[in-house]
Length: 248
Image (cartoon, rainbow, N blue to C red; front, top):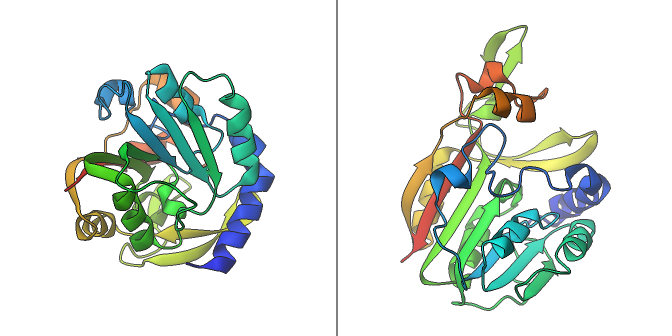
């Protein structure tokens, strides 16, 4: 685990938490990506025990509560995000437990317990993908589902310069890199698609579905387009990857 990166990222997320309150939660999987209402990857979650990795402000857990999940659990690196989630979910119907913790650590979560673990646009912040996915496997019951979404590995390797799309780095390049996130320094991780899939397989998962589609309706473009996620890039590149896997 990269302690220095986690320290930098924790400070950064605490500083920008208010700006990301309720940003792209379920049923959304990410900007200009298909939604859960279209994909139905979770199915019926009634009475199921669910855990979110990188729960942010708690809005995806709120969605699970509205779908009658049995138990809500979440962890997030940012204490400010956890505080926001506690406030948002204080009147939820399901039992709730939240932990301020890096996803690389187990802060006291039960093992072989959860029906579903999920992560919406958070997994790419891990400083140790192997350790994080090993943790997820331990948390899940056999046959349990792990669903995550993240920015597609090719998206940030391409820049739009005066209307021309140009590779700014090699797709083969992996590992940490310094990212000026929202004007606050952060350490991001970059992996190839095969690394995500193979690390899942190596940690006891069967990959059931991989989604790279984009949604470019007028409504989607109006809601999500900004300087980073643009129609010009999304019409030729996937913005997000969504993967559903099952613990063997």
